[in-house]
Image 1 (cartoon, rainbow, N blue to C red):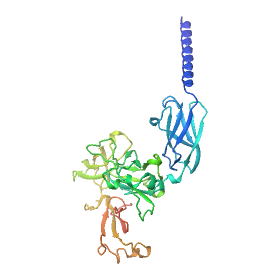
Image 2 (image 1 turned 45 degrees about the horizontal axis):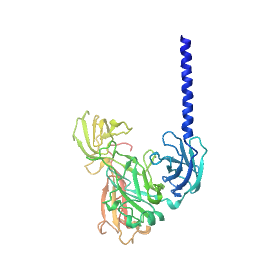
Image 3 (image 1 turned 90 degrees about the vertical axis):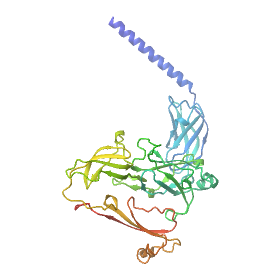
Image 4 (image 1 turned 90 degrees about the horizontal axis):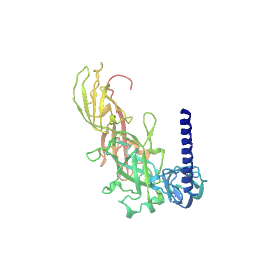
Length: 410
């Protein structure tokens, strides 16, 4: 009886395998040799990001058919929701300048080679700077880069300003940096800015922040971010080339283009036990939501002593203080955070007469804030840069300082 059961199971298994092989052959036969009729666009950015559209037939579906596209040696990633049996859409990888054949591989068929695609510097703006380089959630930022002829005279013509059709999206990390059609600073313009050059574009956008209508988890959390810009019209989503000047470096040496930092608006209570154990409530925004378990961390110290984190959400952190240290910390007097800051002097130079290097020694000597119109002095508590980005001609003088909370090595 046992032997008969085994034979019956083996027979059924063989039958099922044969049936599956037959069905696989039928499905494979249902897809004929793929055909490519046309490809557009013919040009794209060296930095990649261009949506390459391939028209033809017999591409199969996007779920059971293996489809691979290459532009020369560079893979072009299929965008499934823009693709079908008659149309393939893929996003180009970065590539070296030149013209390359396009290869389409569908299932087990031989690759189809059709036409060409050119990686061109004429279709590649640059990304030179993001100002400011750091800010809290909701910061307004400006993006500067070298423009191309296509960008200024074809894709973003003056009559189109305000609708932002030539800008597809601006992302910092995984989140959208919002452009507001009602805000003239969001428009793409083509200024002359002495700090970065004469043939520029400038785009404005607003960093994400949590509010009553935007409560997406992790939105606006402090971190170091890089920008992704998709240019539309003839660039079909192409990226700009990010130049080294657009990057900063964190303490671990990792490059980034913008640092989103948290803001602290309150600490309760203001006093606590010398022995520690006080539950401290820190309010503000930009703190990580630890229960999401996204790998975020937060550290708080009071007078140099770590405060043990209990919980953290976007706008509130709870921690428990440690014992008071043996040495007393210096009072900060409420003037600057973290015992450090930047003394910053801004000198307006409407005629540009003092911008040459031999005369820079005059700043704060014969040329002072008091005797220069529209000039001022302040203390920077965020990042080492001013915010006079729209002033065409100016000089600035800055000096960092640090007041140690207690004796020691820093």
